[in-house]
Length: 179
Image 1 (tube, rainbow, N blue to C red):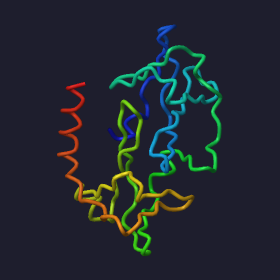
Image 2 (image 1 turned 90 degrees about the vertical axis):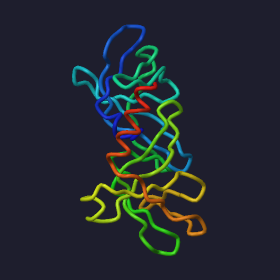
Image 3 (image 1 turned 120 degrees about the vertical axis):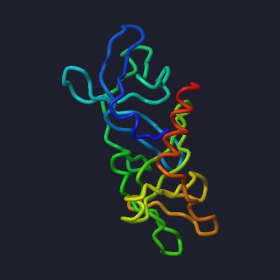
């Protein structure tokens, strides 16, 4: 699933049966290949909150459920030790260790059950944006996130061409129907 699909999804407390807010952003730890937390825009306009992924009961298509409101934390700024907001990661260059730009991060693919980062969708210029073709860069030990760029060790295969947007949407819909 695309991580940006989480944005705007309702956060619901199972204990209270109340909508506590909606997802505003996703906190990622690319070097550990995982989602760490979700930032929440609370219902009623209070200060943003944070829900650690380990506290999420379930992530469905229409809502993310939490056991109760005790799991909501005060939002903390992203630490400098490898955490980054999805909104900031998108647009980051992916650079081969040879100095060649592989592409620009347009999306992060995650597993909706484990919240593991599976890969990155890259655009390679205006043409790929117009045609809908993207490159897919698997999230593995070859990829390292720094403060300014995503480094891809050249000893590993270059990003593979990803299927068209239409093919990706069809696969995502089929997956959603099964779950």
